[in-house]
Amino acid sequence: MAVSPRELVTGSVDIASLPDIFFKVNEMVEDPYCSASDIGDVIKSDAPFTARLLKLVNSPFFGFPSRIDTVSRAITVIGTRELRDLILATSVVKNFTGIPADLVTMDQFWRHSIYCGLLARIIATHCREVNLERFFVAGLLHDIGSLLIYRKLPELARETLNRANYNGQVLHQAEREVLGFDHADVGGELLRTWRLPESLIEGIAFHHAPERATHHPREAAITHLANIIVTAIELGHHGPVPPLEQRAWDLLGLPVDFLEPTITEADAKFADAFKMIYLENTSKKQHAG
Image 1 (cartoon, rainbow, N blue to C red):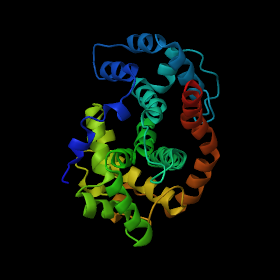
Image 2: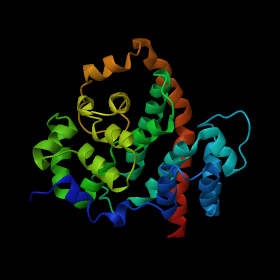
Image 3: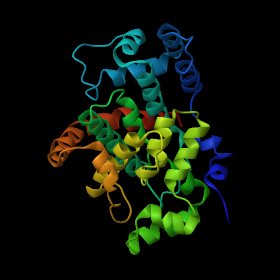
């Protein structure tokens, strides 16, 4: 059966849709005529979501010295685009269901993904990047295409996982042999359907091949490096560690000794981030069911 990443994403709204508030905010962020106050009004119209967002920005994940009590203050401190990215981060984990448990457990998947997001954000800080939340979201969603493959093509997904686990193949290479594309391709297509910024799309679509990123090579290089680190410390992966792309490493210009403090910082923030982004969202969904 021949299928393309675009065909895989098409018709996946049932498992990959996002809340209306995200699309409203995303459209407003890109509209030069919309003010921060307009965006704040839209967010405040959803009281449960506002409460969840304020809880996140006041968590140790950010470590702001004073409490942020209003959406307006959050926008002032964090920024409209960064807040849009956090809305995506806090929404997406609830929208993927029906994944066969023998392929991946959602707990394992999101542990790997959230840790990768933390690493990407910290690496971006070392690289003196701005608007850090886009790097967290790129790391968080770098493997999102895998969930669509597991859901829509479970038998072929089992074959790729078996090749990675038992033949010692890198997973994305096994996917290319079996499917003709990999999970990064699918993730990129999904983000295009969500009309997300090209910097996020390239960071995810090229996290295994950062040299292919034409407009946002640093985003792709940072996500690439974060994924390699989290895979090397064996947090929810299949198969061997993917090779580090030398050009990506050279582009970032990081010292070798950045690694230990980066992992230490990610470790310190992981439990809180995992609770806020995954556990609290999924536990509410389970109780509602």
